[in-house]
Image (cartoon, rainbow, N blue to C red; front, top):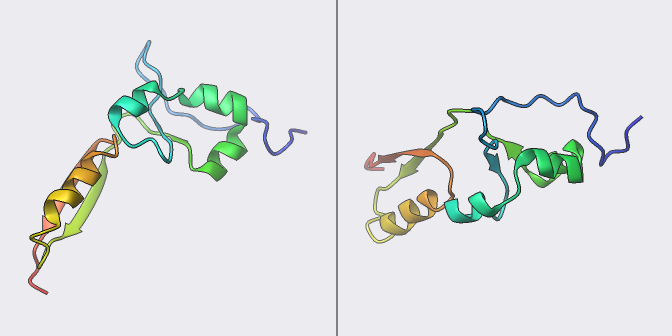
Length: 103
């Protein structure tokens, strides 16, 4: 039986294009450059175990992953630029929908 911090080998992972390391989401890795310098998911899973990765919020991103973010902007003239900058700064592939619903 595996201890909680050892990988069991039963975890599902998505396939990555040949020769390309899987993309991961790791809290605290805020820019694309930092994400490129971060260890790949398989290395983290091997070192920490799948259980610890899940508890720390470290996940492998599926191929083609895009995060959709809906941002309400009514009366937010002074903060829109900063919010968009922060969303882009996550290093994740994102699509943003800015909504001014007048409420």
